[in-house]
Image: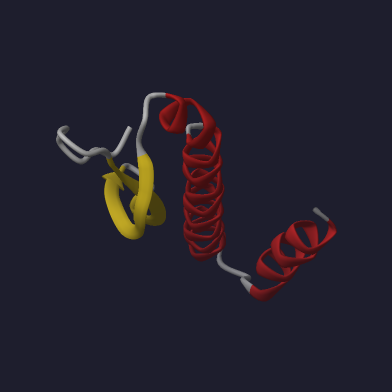
Length: 91
């Protein structure tokens, strides 16, 4: 958290123009929110492992997935599961 505050202070001090400062801060916050969403999506994926394995599925691999949000494109890693006789899935 301290490094985030340090980054924000640097942006504020680096721009004299109010509009340029706001644009720089907006870009920083969008990037930050994108990173937080990436971490949250990966945490959700981790939370699905036990439940999905109880259904008979096994982790086949992890793939990089992307979603487009108002904060930009977010890429994260997600597990793909397989089970004999069933269709592979991303829960």
